[in-house]
Length: 471
Ligand SMILES: O=C(O)CCC(=O)C(=O)O
Ligand SMILES: [Fe+2]
Image 1 (cartoon, rainbow, N blue to C red):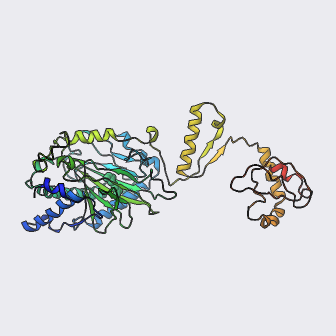
Image 2 (cartoon, rainbow, N blue to C red; image 1 turned 30 degrees about the vertical axis):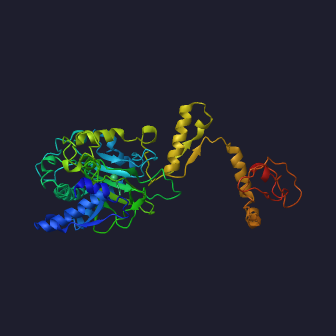
Image 3 (tube, helix red, strand yellow; image 1 turned 90 degrees about the vertical axis):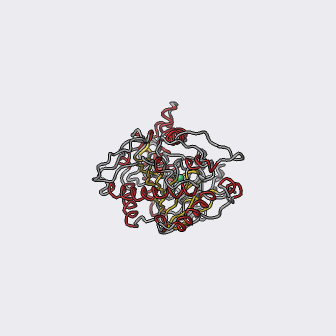
């Protein structure tokens, strides 16, 4: 059956992501290779995602890159920001938390990243950049060796292992499309091969569907080789019934998923499937995608095997580089068009000047609101100064508290279920009738929030001035 005919009848409501054994990827046995190609074709047409096992990348190499990713993301924010990707013309470098927003309905991606592109292995004579890759071309930026010893070497080691795997995959994809094995050879001379180290902090607290690790999206290049940290479920893939299917890490495997360039090239016969990642594991999660494409000057023309009178070309022909550039320009920017610069590993509690609270100047009020938001998101604690409570009033209350500590201790357990006693719930200012040792304030305050009820206060004669001072 032709590819087009198969595509018409294939079942797309997959319930899991298939696992493909790559043992025969280099085999000279035509039959074994054919079997492997058939499995890849089925996965590409049905799911757009598959795991690969026996991929040949050594665990020690992957572990080296992971260790370096952890060391890098542990650096203080200001050091990471020295190589922020916005400072480089080709988007290489560090991207802080919430600086990306893959899903336009989302409130930002809760991940930080480090991105770099093609670079020859150290100690070779190849030039640093690949020459022909348009918008993403140019040198990488790296944290200094002093900051993260071994980072450059170990990360590049994993990068080259993954790039080599990617190069082995192209002939298999070509065969799966009934094309000669060599079809992509002249189109992948300077392959776009962008790698990202990603760190997803745990998403704890109330579930907010608008904030997730990486919002629903498709990848842009031909295919992605994704390493995900073992033991942490986060990645999900959308099937044709709009159901999110978990793609948990499987030890010893990598995930390969197709991107939009393959979908365009194959007239959607190969699926570029929507996916997202949410880290609700309560621990940090790391992942490392490598986005693998053709040279950027290659035209994404529908392949003859993927077009028929009933299935005319769906996409206009553009080059791979033009496509990536268009996607880059269409990427939604985060709130306020500027990233939150959040360091979750805060080392201090910020001090916020509340002077702006009484200001009529919208800029000053905006600044105050931004400061408060940053403190809330980053720390959950902040000092306030210029809060308007006179020192004399606080000192009076403090004085009374000190004087009457013994009394307070004694009365503490009489406060009852409402936890009142020394915690004063909003009341009218005292309409005080000091009658007995359990003197009470007027309880009908009209303020009935969560904790309405009667306050208790000490005997007025023995603790003269306590209530007046506190209230
Ligand atoms: O971290 C993951 O599991 C997915 C990452 C991803 O989809 C991407 O970076 O495009
Ligand atoms: Fe992705």
